Length: 431
Image (tube, rainbow, N blue to C red; front, side, top):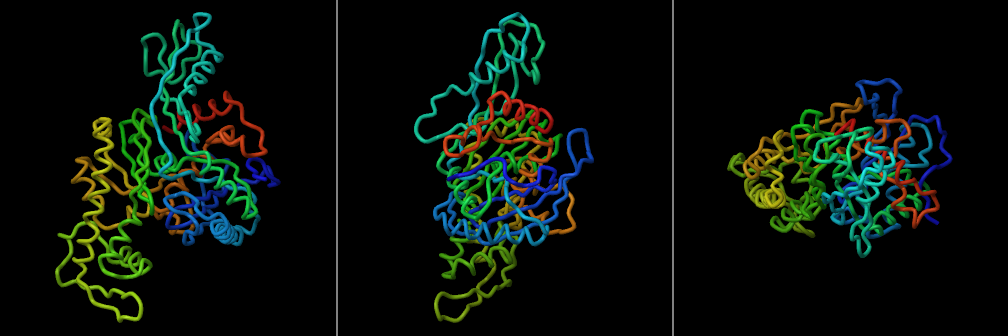
């Protein structure tokens, strides 16, 4: 039996655990949410424990072997439990993978009594869900961007406004329901429950951008091991979400194939000696490269190593550029580009991104958390940090409705109007 929702944890507990099952690594963070506000909408977020372990049973953000993945999740959360000296019985999961897809959509209704009521808002938001969602895809997110009353657009909250027609413009995020089901199964097998889901691209964007960037327009790229999450936020709302099937793991494979070295050794070389621009590396720099089998290690020019990486890095940003140019989204990213995820640690990757995308680029950092450990400020934790910020922004907040998963859980579905209000309130505060 699959379980998602409330558990036997103490209701007064202020600790929330976020789980991210990535292609290269499994990651978890434990947040202690304070009742003290650090700004108008944000509570103090203190990360009190972190854990990272090699990925097992996951490929491109998707579980391919349940038992292997569940065993590693159990190991990961056991480490968190030892650090916080408490039991972890439920987690918030980052939902990622190339199966996710976002698109803009709109719907309109007639205002019944000449003044927009809560019922009118509920009806128009319900209407946005009526799309052709054939096959195994499920609607995961309905994110309000703005409302239009008659011909007046740019309205965040239309309640009480006079008018005859109410239109809602939203961003829809869909995904394969089976992928979310397998995450729930995996966590259940580890002896825990899934309390909630947060889409990875949305979480990362929340973690590494400022209010000013989100208002002006910003492109966020979370470069993971198997995929890259692409998010565009403008005027404070999410207007584009996509996932590229190219990630840092492809760079590792290129090194392994080009240098004829094991995958594990190639990953170490990438992290310790890799760079995105061959022209920045001296010709006389050499590195030791492990050979396959019983052959002895060799000395290889570091420039050769970087020359294997640079084409794939450029390919990644060319894919992003094609995605953005086709929809003219680069024109609204006035604040530039923010890179995060493990792939953002590659030296010089921001320079390559600037060259190809033609926008200012920076490496993302976290400004709304505190921790006694410097390890948690690593960009690999971007999605985890963002998911924790989403969950901790409002006490009792649910980021993605369990309604989307009620067909395979025993949890009571969250009413549409309730979770839509949560989503709308949070986005109005933070995006």
